[in-house]
Length: 401
Image 1 (spheres, rainbow, N blue to C red):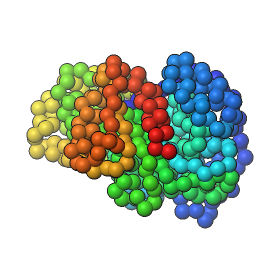
Image 2: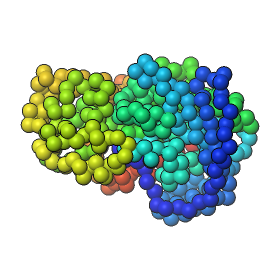
Image 3: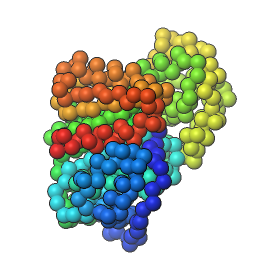
Image 4: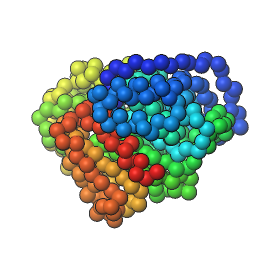
């Protein structure tokens, strides 16, 4: 569930700081600003450098048809019944034409300064932004709690608000098409891509679009890497360990779920006192994952109370915790959308068995094995598998264009 990082790649970009007129008549799109303009030649040069480390990046180069303009946008959505202005990036080809949408959901990030709109030149985001040069309108939502909505505590792994905020950004693209990028036309065809938290978010979005919003959007294909789709399983597995290397994830879930009353329990019901008191201050958008890890502990018995470890799966006291984790999981369903699941076999952050179980549940629910696939990335851990999974997802989409 890590924010994607890549090796340093040099590129030329420019920023346009001219103010944009308000979009007073729009339902969703509130504002738009050009962040960067990239030429076709520049994109090819950087992809060529990227291919020295990730060979699959070279496979994007023949698909490049234009340069890319990157815009930061704000748009209307809602959270817990109240209106919220959220934000994200929209990346468009510079060549006039008609294009589908590719929605990218990023992995776990704890820093406000590392959200897509705050750092559009982040080299991980750049690789996703480049995909627009191959004939997509690419969107990168910030998620609630970042960018324009940074005053909110990020509702980490909260399914309803994640789906709603990304759905409303998809809706904002139609108004962006009309008001800003008038030389391109955006279809309602969508491709969904994500890894880690983003894999979970992509799976949640896929199910919502497939079952509830098919009249608005047609998902052509989706690719989900290493997502914690079954949060109840994830919690059970973690509490059964002696050591867990990413306590930042555990505190993040608990902080969000207690802040928004998804858990009826206090943090002190689950975490030992020194960590229960520290957790709320660690998720303020100013602490990196590495710093948060250093303030917590990898020892499961040191992090959690003995009562929680013995009763998490059975004690009535923790029924609300179990219910919240189940409610925010994405279980299998009968899906006709081509779906690729991927997971590194050496992943110690998110258990590979979760992806295997998700695939089994999809097939068991009626999804065809001719359209749903599970691919293991042998020997790769959570971080190492992120770029290969995303590039494989891009290649998967080409089959269905």
